[in-house]
Amino acid sequence: MWFQSILLSSLFMMGDRVRTQIPVYVFAPNPILSSGSIYVESIRDNGDDMSEELRSEMMQVEIDVVIEDDAVYLSDSILHLVNLSSPNEGVDGFQRGNIRADRSLSSFESVNCIYHIRRFQSYLRSLGFGHLIKPIRIDPKALGGSDHSRYNSAKDPPTIEFGVGGVDDAEDAQVVIHEYMHAMLNEALAADRKNSAAISFEEAVCDHFCLRYSEEITGKTDDRVFSWDGHNEFWDGYTVRWHDLEIADPTCDETCQREKWLFLLRKLEGNLPSDLLDRSLLIFFSSQSIGTSHEQIAKQFAAHIESGLQLVLRPILIQHGFLKPETEGQIRKLYANGDVLHLKDLELFEAADLLHINGSPIQRLELDGSPFLPLPIDKTGHYLLRLTNETQFPKKEEWYYLIVF
Ligand SMILES: [Zn+2]
Image 1 (tube, helix red, strand yellow):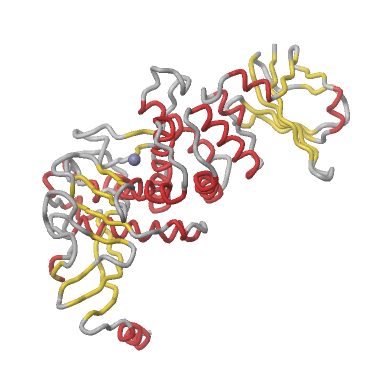
Image 2 (cartoon, helix red, strand yellow):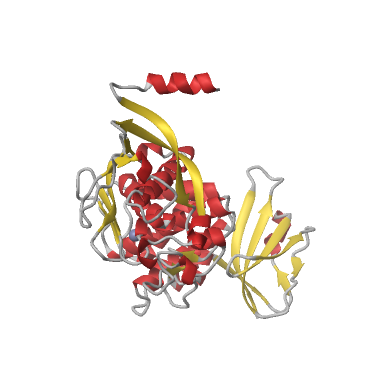
């Protein structure tokens, strides 16, 4: 093994430039999630200071670098670390001794964001979307003292600036992945989509990918988006949460719309393999321009998911206030008086899945050719019914609203 690495290193020697790997320390994805903690005194930002608790949450990883004249460069042909806005500090080309397990060193934000973006790029390549990875300039310490970050597609190459207010944004991998996901979606989508509904939808998709990335590292789910940079004394962050408002309701503000979409995406993850949903979201952005209202986006998204993944989404979207009830006409209704459904067509199917209106299953019922189906329901109300015949070719599947009165 050792001779192989010497051979590889020598292959990449260019004058006195050497491409190699070095050990560095990062948060993975941030100290709140890795420790399973909430924002307490010992995990405070505290002006970039170290604490024993923060040190114990640092993880050693290997990172690709170029060493030239004793300076360590983290940039590569795609990710260019540059100073775009204040603080006007060096963001690349650090002395070797300046890359240690210490977040108070000026190199830390650069190391942390480059590591996580490269790791996330591997995931995007594994999904088949490596073509979206294009050169980008990144300032890990930017935007003065403000506590936000921004992606800018108008620059060439595009830029990401991570603010240093509150918890430095580049230290929380959830912020890093969220911002980088904007760059990916911008590459994916050919048409302009800068209307408020499309922006809220895009924000939710970026939140979804940052939560997916966090879960992949920790093996646990957590509903907090930006769980270290936000959810603290500086800023509330976002949360996967249900808002009991239609998305077109004027009182459903930007946070409500974004969190509703995020709630829906996370809910879909329960019904689909995660990588299938992620791939489907990227194809959705690649294949069409996004509508100008939440309802248009919801219709396009439902059509895309339903045709690609054989998952009936429309009833769930109506129930959650993404589509107006008139869309309900597209799904047939059945009425059951009491606990028995009478339907002549039942003889065409071999099984019936009874679901709550939010899509969660109640019971699978085998059909015996009788037009009467006893329903294991003790409450009147709205349900979903999925009738299937898998022995038939092609397989037969029909969805109904079931109204029990
Ligand atoms: Zn964003």
